[in-house]
Each structure stands twice: as structure tokens, then as C-alpha cells.
Length: 307
Image (cartoon, rainbow, N blue to C red):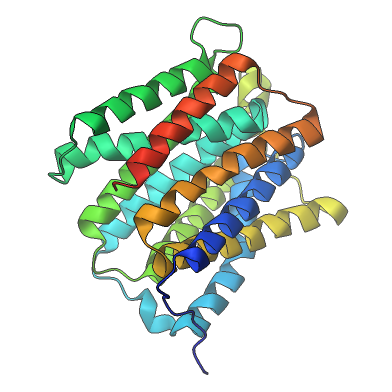
């Protein structure tokens, strides 16, 4: 079968387009997950999303060069990376279910800040004074959005921060150990990890028996597995397709454009999440949260241009 691919051009515009498309696609997934989180446990969402994502991912791999791309030299690296991403996305879904989408997405963008810090200690990279100042500005923005001591600051508000932390660790180990791994393997093996993780949770806690004695906040984890039908099934199916398309768009974005130019456009998802939050739930960030968001975006854009 003939390979289908895009070629790098002198302009980064194609890369920017794919980054924007990927961000928009994933923002739709966030909306779907929040909508279905009132009816289904997180492990079911993770499992079914992975099932429905697997076929289009395999199709893309076939079109891009074949299944030989799935060969890996470092199975342990793939396993650890998959577990980190499983933890990251599970916590992210928890946050999506319990706090406004815009707040979840904004705080999750602590990831570029953590990546910069970890790169100093684990990748022997250097950050100049302006870089450290940008990090301080970014973390100040994170704290501003989370607002410690306020009524909105609780365990739920910390979830996207921890999610971003796990994501950052996965990114750093990918840069350290994933140089010889194909892009296809870096998408396929985490998907298989999500599938296995969701399946194991389904097997051990999917009957809902632990829910009666658990804290109400654990409902999203311990809720009984329910077979989706009708519109819900279509929505969950959509998350799988979105995952495959979104990952493809992001990978194409970084392949077709200079990373320092296209990376800041990932922040496009923050204003989009604010729009979705208002349209579906009438969530409106206050001035303090908006100020923190601006600090995070400004800091993150500066840092991403240097990664």
C-alpha cells in the first residue's frame, strides 16, 4: 500500500495548522468526557476510549509505513512511559469531571514548566536568568488559578497539577530514552497500557461493590461498570476517534514545523476550553483566574520556544 505522508516545507504554517487542529480536537474530547462522567466510571471511559482508538491508530500506522514501526528496543521504557501517561490522563479525567474545564486545562499546562525544571536535573540542560524568571511567572500563574485558601481550592483543584507533573516526567524520559523509538510506537504502546489499565480496574472494582463504603468523591472511580447504549455509545466511540486524530495532528504538527514556532500554539486549547465551559455549563473564569491564565500562557509560550 502506498504511504501517505506530508512533507516538511520552509514555512511552519502547516505545522501550526496541525497543532491547532489537534488542540481543537482534544478540546472536544474534554467536553465529551465531562458530559459522560456523570454516568460512567473513569476506568470504563479509559478502557473504551482505548478500544475505539486502537483501530484508527493501527490504520494510521499502516498508512504511514507499516507495523514494523512498532518494533521497540526498550520495552521497559515503553511500559514506564505508558504507566505515567495512564496516571496523567486518569487524573486529568477526574479533574474534568469535578471542576470547570477551563481550570483543568489551564492548570494542566504546568507541564511545560515542570519539563523545563526536570530537564536541568535529568537532561543536563541549562536555563538562563530569563528562563528561570519565566518559570517563576508561570508557577505564580498556576497558584493564582488554583487560589490556595479559597473555597475553590481543594483536592480536586490539585488533580490537574499532578496530572501535568506525571505528563512532564513522561516527556522527560521520552527525550532521554526515546530517541531511537518510532513515533508510531510512542502512540501505540501507551494506548495498549490504557487498555490494560482500564481492563484491570474493570476486573477488580467494576462491579461497584466498593462504592457503598467509599467517600463520595471516589464515585467516579468506583462506580459500577455500565454498558453504554445509544447516544452515550456514540460519544464514547467519538473519544476514541478523537484520540487517534488528535495524536496524529500533534505529531504531524511537530514534524512539519519548527518546534520552537509551533509549540506555543498548543495554548490555543485554553481559550477554546473557556468557550466550551461557558457554552455547556455557563462557567466564567473570574478576573483573578484570567490573570493567572495570562501569566501561564505568557510563561509557557516563552519556555516552549526554548524547549
